[in-house]
Image 1 (cartoon, one colour):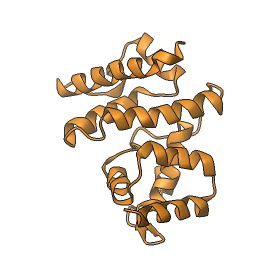
Image 2 (image 1 turned 90 degrees about the vertical axis):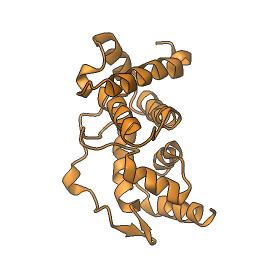
Image 3 (image 1 turned 30 degrees about the vertical axis):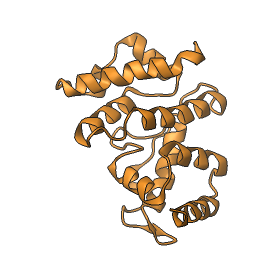
Length: 176
């Protein structure tokens, strides 16, 4: 694997997904050939991740956009290669256990919900029905002045320490 070429390879697959979705093609598993799927898997990424970026790109005026997708997937890839040693998790986040979209922590809506979601993204445990960086996540990130990749890295640094993460978000939210 040529690590240095990751951004360019990711860009090519991202652009392919956006184009195929725009042309009316549907289904994450139909977007990439076996070699491309193997490259994605070797980097801790699923076809569903790129499909979600493409779907939202067309449904939300280009959001989250390539730059945010690359940032998110670089953090995920780093965790996959260096913490998971290139081995995919066999677990999947149970959507039924997610906090409600209206739940708050320190008065910040969505924060309780995005904590388990970001942990699942970091570990590669997102169900196909969820997207890290979806419209609700983007609204949270914009309101709190946080980059999606930055939040993912925060989750990695603090692990299960919700109090430290919530404190960091509250401090960031206060500096707008």
